[in-house]
Length: 51
Image (cartoon, rainbow, N blue to C red; front, side):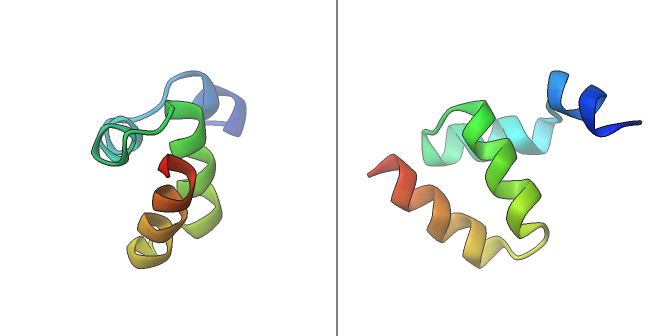
């Protein structure tokens, strides 16, 4: 699976993250791509966007 395909069809994890933090799916995907498995940093970044 390429990045282009991944960007077009976000996984459940991205959707759940977006709903949890009330951010757009595109923003959630960018955050998760940037921070990967570091959930603490990803949650912090999402809070900054949602505020």
